[in-house]
Amino acid sequence: MIKTSKKFENIPPYLFAEIDKKKAAAIAKGLDIINLGIGDPDQPTFPHIVEAMHKAIDNSKNHNYPPYEGTKKFREAVSFWYKKRFDVDLNSDTEVVSLIGSKEGIAHLLSAYIDPGDIVLVPSPGYPVYKMGTILTGGEPFYVPLKAENNFLPDLEAIPVDVAKKAKVFYVNYPNNPTAAIADLDFYKRLVAWAKKYDILIASDLAYSEMTYDNYKAPSILEVEGAKDVAIEFHSLSKSFNMTGWRIGMAVGNKEAISALGVIKTNIDSGIFKAIQDAGVVALTTSTDLIEKNNNLYKERRDVLVKGLNSLGWKLDPIKATFYVWVPVPKGHTSASFCGLVLEETGIVVVPGSGYGPEGEGFFRIALTESTNRIEEALGRLREKNITFN
Image (cartoon, rainbow, N blue to C red; front, side):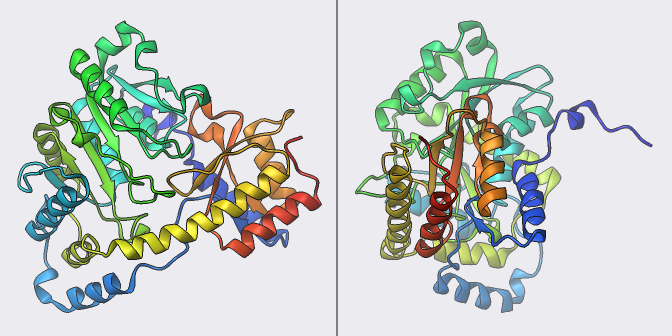
């Protein structure tokens, strides 16, 4: 048999692929599964976006290859949306590129910057793609701990100077997956200054900026003066508009980084189907009332879940963003053992924090992607099986 590469051998199975296998095994046993695992909205894409897609599919001009960097209409819509939402000016020709979902852009960025042995700063816990993208390019991930006592923000001064001098890219993600932590502009100002000091490219993952509650509005790193000198930002239409399966997103910011990412993409993909980009243009003009209605649904679920878990011994504060709740595991359990117990005993799927990096151990993640009734049922199953934090 032909031997796979060393890089390939260093890649574990994708976290959610493994969870799907365990879920399938539980279903085979006859368990009624309540899936609070993967962060996939359970609501349909907004109807006006679907209608726009229907019309765009019928347009034969959309049936050929799209522009590699994205259609002009889509890039201009991204620029307009950033100006309206964050008061950030973007040149749609040089500071915006379309993505087949932000995940691929986040991973492919490193192909433009990382040589074997180069250091990439990876938050822990953090979205697994940051680490996997690093390994696939031969880079070395250096974990930057996100700790509860620091509100899950990185302690920039705790990053060793010799590491900072060697690092080329630093991934940050606020609002955060998996912790739901948030960052303010003061943090981004410090981060931009720190990145300029060490000549590091900040890769900001802003996929959850519109999924916020209790009057909180998430900022963009690009609101900071001079941020474009050191920052590229990734965004997605997946969560805000219930479009996970459509695979459409964008990268914006530093024009050199946008150009470099564009070069990688022209050599490995052929862009997004133009009809999807037409629908994306419509999505970016969606009324904030529709997004707020979506968020109110998650807020209701959040309140039911947090109240219910606190009645079982946890002491959780309501999240202000994302649709994830980051929960400590009871004493005597690892993340994996507790999540396994919950699945086997109750049929509830939750995600072990260890899958998000070393500092994720001791926690598990719950996604608010089932109805309020199903969340209440899940809480009832935990109570019935005496699965508590006490």
